[in-house]
Image 1 (cartoon, rainbow, N blue to C red):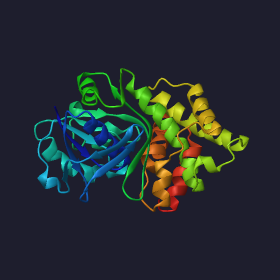
Image 2 (image 1 turned 30 degrees about the vertical axis):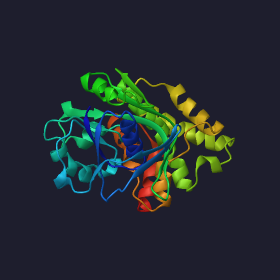
Image 3 (image 1 turned 135 degrees about the vertical axis):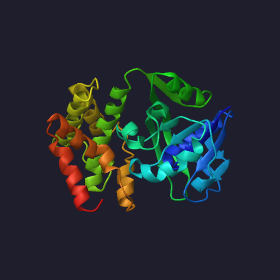
Image 4 (image 1 turned 120 degrees about the horizontal axis):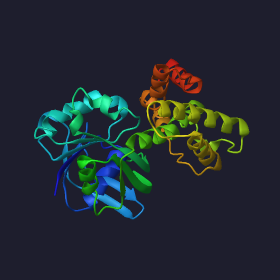
Length: 292
């Protein structure tokens, strides 16, 4: 059994908590801004109701064995308020966020040897009543090593797949390549399903946006080729890609968005390597100009 705390119990954090709870092996603490009477997650296998300890004040946090951070990427500073208490005994911190800068984001508060970046592939929505709807399988990817294997062990017995890989950088950048193109639907304020998915002009823009990310990822050491971008574009245009865009949902609800973690990082690292990223740069500029 492990004492595990989930910080940021939104859509992803809720699913992670439900998966941990389903193992019937862990003591779970949910760390939230507001009291959470009950966490209800609709999964492909049925409804899971997580009834466990809920804290709303970081001053009440006590040492646990594992911390899972599932807050938004831009929310690192407020998330970090929970860490001194939760990691008092040296607990590792698994960061399940978008982007490729998990380690850099939490470097001021977490020792690098304690930090476990996680790539999350879960199609999930949070409903108006607070219920979380997991629409498909849960797949998590972590880096090979002792902590990566221990993280995978946390989910043993749950209906999830945890992949432990030596080439974690490629997994990070492959996910970002897909996420970066989702900004097109954010700019249009409508999901890809509302577009004419056979439109060749749109297909070209999707492909070129993904190719910019591939080029920067390669410069950063990821093992990607142009076929990665083509598969992403083909999936979107066939309507087989994940069209549940959390950033679009945030924009429509008037919430802050992860524009820097998804597209801004491509622009910033592209500049470092002398790689032009005009489509990603345009997306960032337009959304920031609107105050997004």
